[in-house]
Image 1 (cartoon, rainbow, N blue to C red):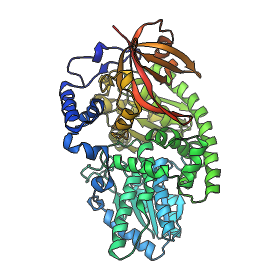
Image 2 (cartoon, rainbow, N blue to C red):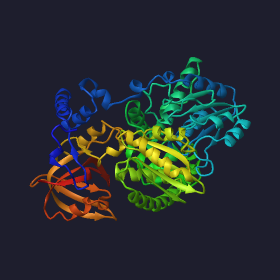
Image 3 (cartoon, rainbow, N blue to C red):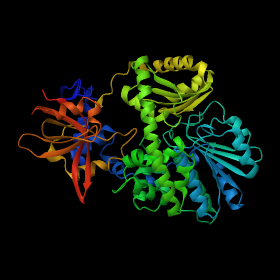
Length: 584
């Protein structure tokens, strides 16, 4: 980012990263924006980094669906899908929803179930078992559903399921998905997918729940044209927000409005499943994007990972508080089990990956008996540790089922799709940042070698340690609650829209204490100036913790994200410390 080399001269921080500050152009744009809007310079810098000018600042800080929602009919097959869906509702036909077992699939399923329930029509929920059936529609399940239903709606899956959808003899099939499409489409009545090859890709950042929401928007339009009223879609944005964040969809465009307004809906505590799960997780503040991705999302995912696949969707869809409490308790317990399983696989996978080499275009590991429900999480951990695309595979008999996670600028889904097309994989697909695969044990090495070669062509072998991009310098006295609240208006922050990080230069640490096994809490400030508290999670898993704990009075540049710490009815600023460097 910076035109003049490393920011504050930090070429290698305590965690091994180079610091990059704003470019000269973005600094000038931020200063002009601050003058024209009276926004704090730190907020103006965030907007300037996103390419927002003075004319667009107000709209960016207050994103609304009215301004950002695309015309649903711009997606191919969507009008056909909505028309068939409404025809089934009007004729009281039997509808089945076939969903994926992750949060996006569960939220997508719950959207349809909730909408249909409010229209007085029950439907059948079918979530495949991750181990026994694998991802997406399969022929036996689709044939069985077709024998009992008139319409099957596949959500967050189905775009590549040619044979399975062909097996749904006697029923119409509608696909509402977002995964990368192939050269041909399955024999469904409608395939609505912004990542179809014949789409423009302008809406390729949508998760499946957002695609379902757009279909319901069109259904609502058709109902109004007929003089009828449909369910309140705005009240369902909590599900779209949850899925958008949990599926790591980039928080750009309409996704910002989905998440911003969905969090407002969630704060009303009207959905029993989310209320029960939030209470169990001791979520005692208004929910944020962080809570969706790291508190609620993992618990909802736990059923599909190591338990009963449909628990998450049922939790999100239920309108019964007692049932919600039971389902939430089961998911919370499964999530505890999942963490233990994940820790063991992560340790083994990291050791294997290190032995293979962490500087290759692809970091991968495979092991017998590794639970397929945690390989995706472990792949994410390998990716974070190495800043390389990572794939982790659990082997069982002659087959391996794996999951991959990518880094910015590297399209892992397309590469895996190519290897599957070349028949080195039994199947595989996904999107840029995440993908899944099934491979024969005897093809494991050649398949990973070919995948690595494809990723090298994208430049994955030339990626260095992740740079830390910083939005500028702040002093402790400027880090007030009011500033943080204004910064949060530039959110929500997450994939594709990282939270702004600031540097507090030449700080002295006045208090440092280890918390738990690996965290560090500290207080810092400039000599004679205001003090600011900070928390560094996982600090003792890196050189950061020991260096700051044993500071010996030295001065440090401290970098991280500002947040509001709410405790005992009090709100005060806090730095979530992510990195540090010794001050010259």
